[in-house]
Length: 127
Image 1: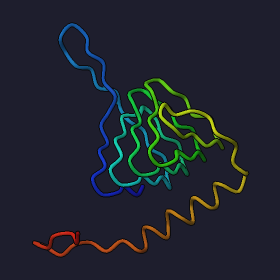
Image 2 (image 1 turned 60 degrees about the horizontal axis):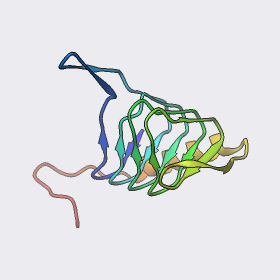
Image 3 (image 1 turned 120 degrees about the vertical axis):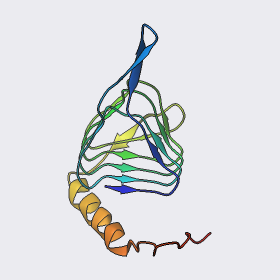
Image 4 (image 1 turned 180 degrees about the vertical axis):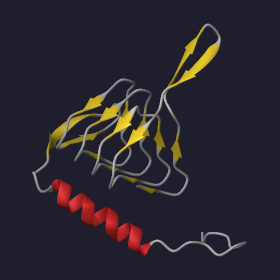
């Protein structure tokens, strides 16, 4: 899982009688989340690419091998089917993906991971 700078992952929740009930968030392998994205999804399948500046609302389910385009806002309880592209605000179905998407997303995630350079102790990220 690759998470971009300034992104926020927070579990879905429900307010019940003044208390908060949090639900676990499940994230599959080879998932990339772009910078400045907020994710409150219930489930994200394997080989999913979420672009930058997206908002994935509460209880959304993103199935495997899907792409969420940059700037997309998915409303609460949205289900993104496998091998599809969603985009826009509010997020909506834009098209299908080829079966080779899984292989391409795995390669993309592995390349991003190999390019990752951890900061030394006390070092600040470049602007």
